[in-house]
Amino acid sequence: MKKSKSNILIFILCFNLTAIASSCSNNSNDESEEIMETDKEEDEEEEEEVEQVDTCVSGKLFIEKDGLVRVDIENPSATANGWTITRALAGFKGDGYLVWTGADNFNNPGQGLIKFSIKINTPGTYQFVWNSRITTGNSNTEHNDSWLRIKGDDFYGEKLNTGLRVYPRGSGKTPNPEGSSKDGWFKIYMNRLGEWFWRSSTNDNDPYDVFVTFDNAGTYDVEISGRSRSHAIDQFVLFKTDRTLEQAKVANFSEITCK
Image (cartoon, rainbow, N blue to C red; front, side, top):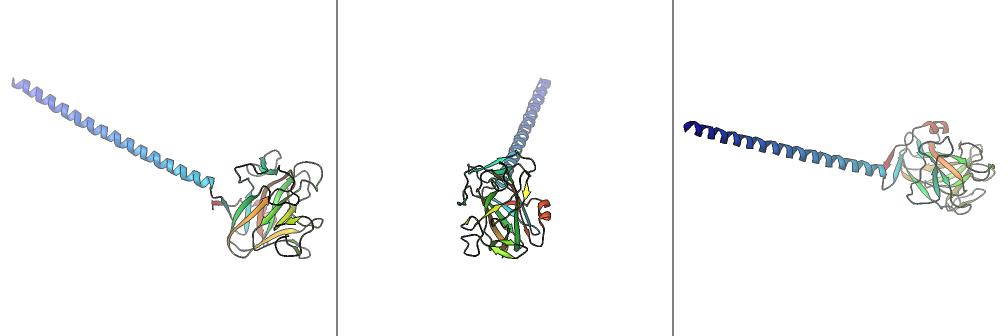
């Protein structure tokens, strides 16, 4: 009889110990699952934060460094605006280039407006040049231009060998260029067939290079709009006048942050 009672006590003790161990084990699993779920949620939050930065809902800001800005032109608009991204012609940089597929706007700037905000850290005078191409026809004076407006402190064209300047119509300054200009916009053209070409000229029949002066460090807008159908633009550079186009063309693309 004593032996039976001892066996019963041993059985009860073992059962209780097993239940306790099982209970501890279950709590541990629950805590592990909770930790894993917490880590997963934190990872998802981090991914969402990264995605928000990548999408730049407020718009992108291109950072000038060492007197150089280099921008791979893309279409910032989520809706159709007359600019089409394509990859048909080799020699472009980045994911593609933009072609104006809207109507000709020979005297009406601002159509298909695309804007690039740049952060100037080094004030001074910069030259502007884009890499563009005629994508149709066999004339070097057609399908070869787009509109440009830079909202700096002084935006002008200059003939380097003479120092003569022209200012866009609507800027309140004179003289104005030969050919079309309006509301602070310059017509910017090139005359090279069959290749991508770094050239930005204003003033018809007597080309002037394009410059802008930034008196202070700050954020400024470079605006482009469609003029001649089938004119393509791949990238643009701004470089201080103590730098060269060759240096700007091989510089890294500018760092981008969100505005």
